[in-house]
Image (cartoon, rainbow, N blue to C red; front, side, top):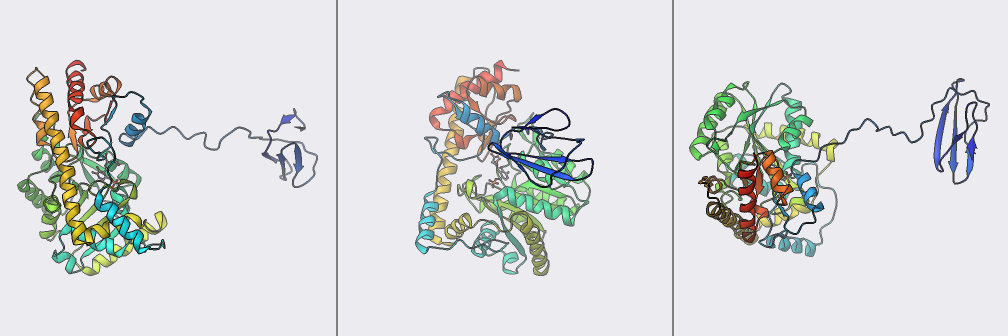
Length: 459
Ligand code: KET
């Protein structure tokens, strides 16, 4: 059926609603449902100065966002039908058969939870108390005086990302003039997090491509040159993407400079246990800063070390100079969390509380983590061996063995990384990072061929 106006007839698609703005300032609505038109409001003979907006979206100006540099790689991998394909993009641990891995301690904790038949009521805004207790203890050591004195504000977060984002919102609210300092390079999402939270950031030098190592002098110089009272974002261990950490002596020197400059250290701890295979050893940097009496922010994640990627479980810890300050900081973190997501999910928090809080499960977890870290070390060695044997150019690949954690920063540039994907079906991030956690011993030779071809034949 057609709607006749003073101008040309207009055909309405079924189920459409049209609002006509009349020159009399009256609004008349028509709806068409199936075949019969309804006259909704007011009968009127109309001379229309009309805007009939059919097939027009109010979101027309929204542009297509680029794929995420890390998670977008997994999407592209899924779409590839080649059997040889290898996903070395996202940092997610796989078995030697390249299957996702659910830790045995996680299954045991989940069975316990099922037996207890716990309810699904809302958690408090700050999260599960049992989780918050064990997560701070795991990070700082259970006997750490700052815990015993109540100086740590711990709030359960939506894994590492959500915890970083909450802390960034806190920085924006209470230190609106402060800047975040991030390493160059760093985990790609750091920039997004600070951008979205409207915290200005700048980079400090970190990686030296000439030595394929740490540019410690550059790092110190940039941290010194930054405005006093900046938030220095540091990777607690297993720096992503370079796999290069400062030595203990360099950490001490960094703490000196940070203290001198009145900066606030902001640790991102996403790989505790994955650098050395040992949870305490990997917490060295954070604990050393805390021991010096510094106030410190620490975001934690259980995605990697407990394999709880999709559970979104982590925490933000703010170590404060007094229990009173810690209470106030915590109250403000809760205030920020409430309108964003109200309160966090319970399942992952219960798993962590059960595993870390139970001596038997805790010790089993350490064994499993050592096993995961060990498998990655084996793959790292095999990749190095394959590259060294196959590459006749004399290039020194030993940097791969010096890097730690889940990743290897290969030094391949964007064009070379593209070649890895387009020709060899090896999916990786465009900064040249490969996740060794997604590699098996049996695929090392193939990967070495791909790397050698890309490195030597693509400029
Ligand atoms: N910090 C770092 C340094 C990091 O590498 C990740 C994740 C996170 C925090 C956050 O993880 P979450 O799952 O929110 O706890 N990195 C891997 C996955 C990702 O990019 O989201 C990665 O680099 O592949």
